Length: 506
Image (cartoon, rainbow, N blue to C red; front, side):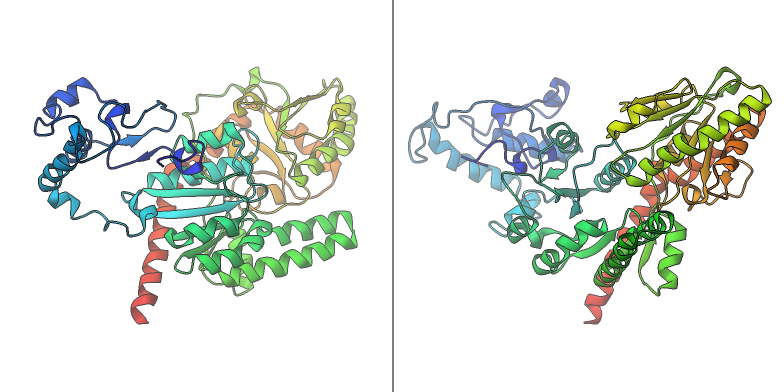
């Protein structure tokens, strides 16, 4: 990056490298001494830092480039710039010493000048490009939690991940830094402003390209096919959009929504037919695509990290919660359904039984302004919270009365992870593969049915305790980071084998 902009994406993600300059190098004294310090064969400060880095890696340690470390280096201020005179001539002399000492190791490196992009990151297993809508915001929505964890899994599997927020190429600095800090090459404006522009220079380095969500996959796929001709293409649906749109049409009975559902269906089927693999989150969606005779469909579920669940004392808890990101319209619809239909019925039922109100707590980012009008003695609108645990720490139940949607629902996995049972719809529980009384599923869209089910379970604290343990174990066994990591490893290995097999046949 000599004489380049230090804010350029390629200079700002943490990664393993062959060596770092001695002008900005940190090493523990213990390791430095154990390796014999700098090799005394290198005189006048040339190549001794490169040599040290080679020794560090040979001893089994890593050499890591940390982009948040900064310094100002005045090139040639000490020794000049002419390699033929003065101390600078030792740059040429020491290079020969270095090459002779490390010739066996250097023979394993890339050839000089051949594909420098790959050579600069040669220690990884391969390069994966992810094209999604925006940079993941895991404190704001469930889909971002899964994308962030998927990226971490790919990095743990020793892939280099490159990420394009193709909706606007926006450098959302805090969230971008979160990815750069774990080793993701984030692509953003003003250095790049289109998928086409980026892939023209880099398309041939990617072993895999993951296209996320129908809208953004549709926009990018032609460019990907043009510039990433040797890449394995994966469509990560997040959920089947046509299914979500069709279910919304059935609720709202709007002909425009039916046309949207048809358009989504044709777009998704075209993408699925154009890629090497399609990833869905649930077995339910896989079965739908199998009925449609779609091949190479794999299931990778939600991805969560679970803390150890302490015993939950539900008798010390009160109220219920709903959590969601409100850029996702099914969540907006569910809140309206609760506030305008379920809670009026619940109030009547509680009054008839002489029971106190049950408080609904509404959490989540990007709330519509009108939600603030829902505030009442038994409805509290909290809005955005940084820590999801705050939504579950003191409640007996969480609510998920989703009337439309598709895929696995992150709000269920999150609630299960905190040991809180969920009262939800069939659509909310779609893809939750557990047959148990712990599944509090309401099989109708009737507000009275929800109110009755809520009262029935809310006061049975012993049953809630039993459900808490069972649902936590289910979520941990099915959605845990390590469980899904194993599935991702198998999938990517199988895709590679399949590609190699086709190549050998040809």
